[in-house]
Image (cartoon, rainbow, N blue to C red; front, side, top):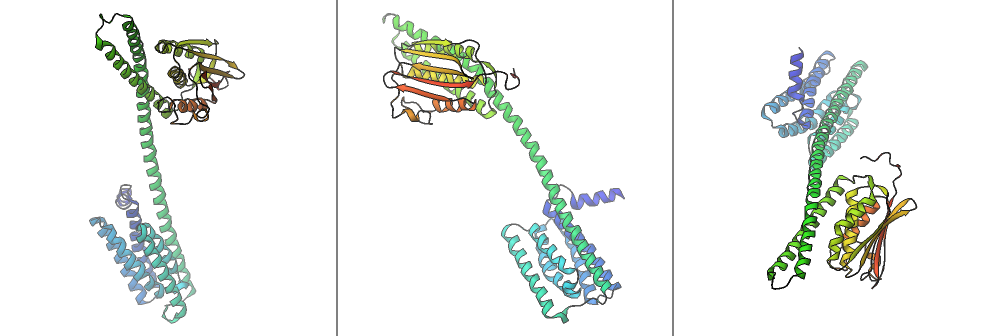
Length: 431
């Protein structure tokens, strides 16, 4: 018996079937059972020959549509036949033969409108549902105006039984409809959650790969760049008769390509940091700043600049070391670009509850007209893309700090930022 029930439920209400198919099967099975029951009650209660015949016809029609739709798969045709044949033609006939609005058939009108909305789509659903609603209102008005065409119940008991059966059937049908819809939604949500989990895992793997690749590529590129710069300086000291005339040009081209690759690597690292969220942890910013200065010192010497540092020891912040390092690199490279045969000074010290870092130079400075807009994206006075300071501002503010610039044309520029000093306030260093 259990196997028969499972087979029946799987055939007409299995999860592989669409929501509309399952709803239609509810309608067809319910229509078959209820119509047969109403026909039998009509015979028992002397409900009239016409009423009995119509109920038998509806039962046969519902069963035929159920069988035909399952075998052919042509559900759209069955939907339309149900709406036009049963809802619009037979339901009003049963309404007049079963007590009119004094019986239970009026509740079937609600059932018809709801199921029409479920089975059809878009404008078609709205048009047919509105048509049915208007038609049913007209049927009720006709029954009121011409009571003689309504087949009334012979007894109060017959009317009560009819009403009880009607609202019970409608409640079960609509309840099954809502249950099927909620079950389908939950199943879809579970599949969506599983897909999102897989996508999130793939995205993390991609981000980790980019981060690892960026880290691995940055160091050799920096070393190669420094070596090329050293060779270029040595070539300048050599006698022109010793060196090949193309050598310096080739090395300069190589240096340009190295710097382009370095910018690409920095972009990859920035992208992974932003997309994956800042990986903040307890960071010794004193060592971080000194390492960045040591890496860029030779690079600044190319334009005749010297890089000096005044960095207090033991400065600790809660930050993403890669992003803060990139901020320092951007600021020092900006200073180099606007300074020649000058001095760039990197300082860091505790200032209240924050670490204050400043990159100053004695270069060309920034015009007063440009100064209010230097942190806006796309603003640049040095031929760049105007993305560096905008990036620095974004990173600093994401760490709870502030950044500002002071400059005087012809006398230099100082860009300062703060990051909150770490005192264990974030509950662990995550290291």
